[in-house]
Length: 309
Image (cartoon, rainbow, N blue to C red; front, side, top):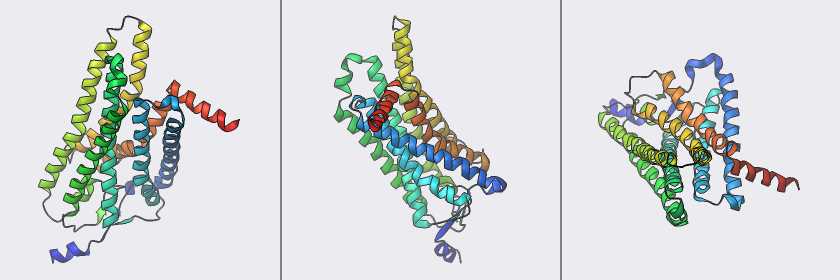
């Protein structure tokens, strides 16, 4: 009988924000507006970095890669969530769920390691300014991006294969997308081995890059404090503030979502954390890096000026 149940599950139902029934349309309007801003912000960021030769530096190369990754990352999750909110389609096929989980994991981990690469870039720029162009050459930058993407792909293949080899009896995913923990809960069998694997991977892909970033910033701060002029210290801190803001939000949310004990948060709290790293964090990149960055703002104004002239 159990075997028959396993073969019957061909699609899942994403429950989404079912506990906020009265506010579904309000949530749709809010998330749709944030989605449009995120897409516009990240696409504009990629465009101005590609078009303006003055921004063809390692820092902006990594920022462009991060913005492109965040754009695809939001496209994987948010359109389906918006459809669920207006009741268009709550079902997702098993293959569709596996594909969504695969791309989500790949891009989420890619973003984690891109932020680490950006931290390393800031470390070299401030602690070894005379050797910066030698150390952060084009080949090294491409290798760091390729490494981030490769780690994401390997982890995603491992995770998705281990989750979708499980037999499923239930069909209702208590989430607005196919995340690892909610899908695993639908299995008919004990998932302890999968949970241990997920926890080990989460520790490696969250704590290791987060640790490397914070080591970089300890070295950066110690170097900045040695700068004699107050103006020099202020300028050095300003170049790191944007990156550090995104790092704290990104790694903070990822740690709470994947490293906390399973039963500690309610479904609503889990979804709130997920909204932060799937909707809010991708919007932070263009806001923090572009609108608060003089070089990026100047490049944007030059692009608008060329368009109008």
